Length: 391
Image 1 (cartoon, rainbow, N blue to C red):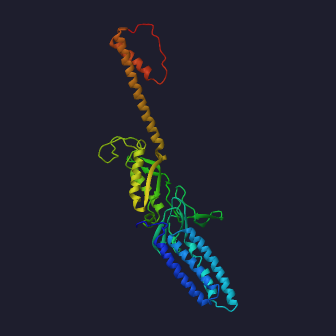
Image 2 (image 1 turned 135 degrees about the horizontal axis):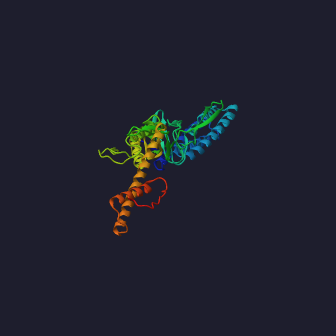
Image 3 (image 1 turned 180 degrees about the horizontal axis):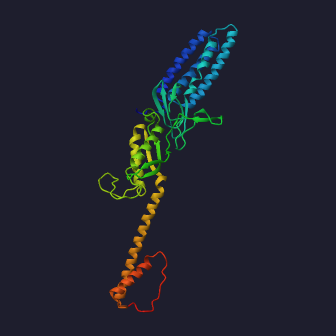
C-alpha cells in the first residue's frame, strides 16, 4: 500500500470556493431570516452564520487547525446566542424556527473539534475513514482532518525492550495490578518516526561446532513507511522482534565462538578465521542485513545492529574455560621453549666464536641440558658449584 502524505494546503482556487460558499451561505441565511419572521435581528443572524460557516469550511479544506478551533468555538458561542434569542422570541409569540436552528446547531456544532490533531516533530498519524485508508500526517503542527477519521496503530499497546515511544495525545487505559490498585497507562495512536533501540532477551544458540553460546543484540531501527507498517503486518513491533531473533539464529550458527580450523564462514568454500568473538563487526553487519531483508515489506529501516552480550552457555562455560586456559598454557610454554633454545644456540655460538672455552660434545650436551632446565623451569634456579672434574 502506497503512503499518502496529508499536508496543509495553500490558498488559490480554494479562496474562490470560499467566496462561493460565503454567497451561498448568505443566501441561505437570508431565506432563513425570511422564514423566521424577518425582524431587524434575523437578517444579521443569518449573515453572521453564513460568514462563520464559510470561513470554517475554508479552514477545514485548508487543514489548518488553529482557525478551525477558533471558528468552531465562535460557532458554538453564536449557536448559544441564537438559541437564547430564538427562545425569547418564541416566548413572545414569535416563530420557533430560530429556536430549532439554534438547538440543532448547538448539537452538531462541536463535531469539528474531533478533527483537530496536534503532531510534534518526528511523529506520524495514520488515518482511516470508514475503514479505508485516508492518509498520513507526518509534519509537525496543528491540523484539521475529517472529524470521522480514526487513527490506527496496531502496535500502540505493545511494549518491547526498547526506547520510549510517543505518548502525547493518548487515551488512558486502566491496568489492574496484583495488589488490586488501578494504575492508568497512556496508550498513543501516534507512530514515532524517531530512531529507536530494540534490545531483545539473550538467546541460547549452537554455533557451527555445536557449542551452545548465549548472545544478545541491540538493533537501532525506525519507521520509514507508516502505511506499510500499519497495514502490511499485524503488529510491526512484534514482527521486528521475531525477525531479529530469527536473523540472529541464522547468522550465529554459521560462526564458531573462537577461531577454529577448516571452518568456512563466508560461503566461498575456503576456510577462514571468522569467529563470533573475533569478527563481531562482520557478524553484526550480516545480522543487520538479514533483518533488513525481512522487515522491508513492513516499512521499517534497520540502521545498525550491535552485539551486546556474548558468552558460552553455563553448562559448558567451565569446560571451555579450562580449554582456553590449557591452550594459553601450551602457547606460553611453546614461546618459552623457543626462546630458551634460541638463547642456548646463541650461547654456544658466542663461546665457539671467541674460543673462550673449547667444549666437546658431551660437555655441550650437559650445558644445553642445564640451560634448558634453568630457562624453562617455573622456579628460580639453585646453582650447585662443582669443584671437581666432570670426568
